[in-house]
Length: 387
Image 1: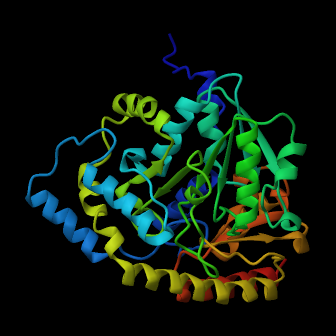
Image 2: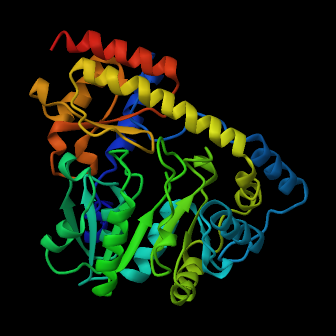
């Protein structure tokens, strides 16, 4: 025996998460002494609100360190249900709320009960890269539907119809990663009705919903109680490392999901759950973060355009700009690699988000301070002059 470990065909279907590999590459450069401006990663640079941290400390002091209910502690599930009632006027039963190990945990659980070999998941291209990988874990077919500036980066009802037979599941993110665009409410309603007619499942990932820079975004739960919504504490509440999310599902899905959750995760992180109860009370900190992101967006958009990046659609949510690099006649992989090595600025190539126009776009994140964004733009400007 040569000691070589064999991997399964299923694991080999998973595509690398480019932005994480790029981050690790940048971190290795920093360990060697380079100073990198990170404009690749989608992680808030703000600290977790103080009330959340204090609640976690209190939980430790009170020995709340044991397994909880597999669906999450009832107090948190009630608080999430209250959140929808207070902010959107949507009344949902806490019994439909499932607390999860991050939104990634929610998506994994959903795919485990909704997808298998012979079933199809439809996603946008460009779109969040992990959706297709969750589907691959369960041998499902992935159908990428191209979206562009012309459709405001939305999957429209017509595009869904044109893509072929109705998918078993459609996932959209609203606001979108990587484009930062927000689906018009009419588009979400049209998709919901079309999928309901074909008895397909509609999943809306609302992890960035609280980060909006225009009209407040209404949850898709207001449209139909058959829509599944995934959300979490990572982005809006600056709690990425706490690994806590939630989803709201139709009643008939709760038990199947619970059985999988019991076996895979046992329960969500206990300390994170007790801390998250206080997250919804951190209105002042959340509003400050949202306004700061808007200021960063308003600075970065004209700067990128001035440098030659093409951005036809202004992002209205999240903290990303999906920028065209056609001016430099360079593939996005090469562009991002050279920007990192030569300008010491980390950007994400479009290939992380699909294949449609992927070679001609990079994602720029403004989840970093204004000073760093200004430094990054200065470095890019000097570098671009050498191209």
